[in-house]
Image (cartoon, rainbow, N blue to C red; front, top):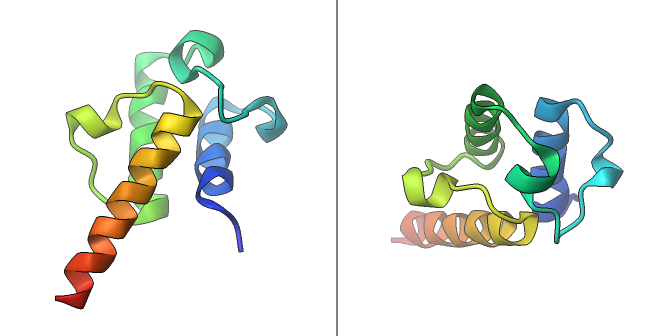
Length: 85
């Protein structure tokens, strides 16, 4: 089973057509990978689809992969809690 990081990395790498190995937790998504505005939207949509979550503007802000993965894990935990109630 893939980790949250591996799944998020695969989305980012696929959208940007780069080798996933180039992406590490400390990677600055905007500053180092230089996605254009359309690619940023595609990354957000890809993450929403991969993780079955909705991201608002604050959560969709792309910083480091570590921060992005942390947001995804928070959303997943929240979704699980909502399912239990």
